[in-house]
Length: 339
Image 1 (cartoon, rainbow, N blue to C red):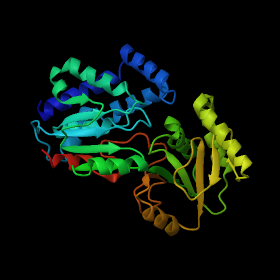
Image 2 (image 1 turned 30 degrees about the vertical axis):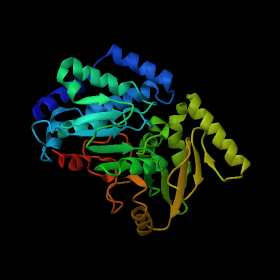
Image 3 (image 1 turned 90 degrees about the vertical axis):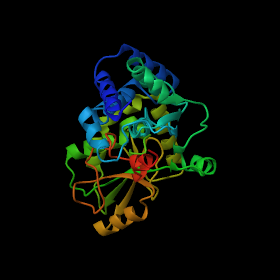
């Protein structure tokens, strides 16, 4: 397939996903049964974000035009080790490989084993040649490059195993937000989407907030209470109750509203159902802190122009565009080297 044919196929998938598909609904039901964190609502949210932000023809054409993408297949194989923290989290990596003209060899996470294969089956039903472009495997072999995503611990094994080949290996990162104390109720409610989407399991979810000294938490706690129905998920509630009991037993000072536990903590990574906060004195202090810890930060949420670092608007962390690359590493620039 030429580049134009690949874009045509992806755009068709995007249009299809924006419509009704009873078979996709069945796959989502199976996925939720297998992994209760992946509710049908969360899966649908991920699918719609992919269709809206990744699979529109004009977006794909503009994105591909930024790179010297070959019009014909490269003959190279790129192995992809997908994470399983949120639904279809590895789709963007596969999309990059496909647009770059490479064959993909995909190792799925057992936590998300059904959605991606179904999407590939759809593409194959429209274009049988897709069978030569992607396969799912239990173990990567005979690959020319690797993109692997996992924890800090698994990354060490990835480095040892894949280190001799060209690679992108990703580790733990988290989203953070920097507040001024002057945010509107609407902005604070939008921040809730950054915190609670996918139960906070994504690397782009806000796990920590920086607030000015003397910050009044009451408006934030009230705004986040709009997401109180999240506690109805058994797995989330179990984590909330366990962490609440743990903090109380250890006499950890908390701020809580029934669906989130907030504690002062220097760490960027927080437990499920928890949000860390840290005070700052001035803008320069928090800017230096974010720069010093940039290898731990996936994205920053703040009012436009407030920070010297790039920042996303409130409520947008789980709606990445084609140009939003994990860990700030340009996946397409890496892949076109092999064309």
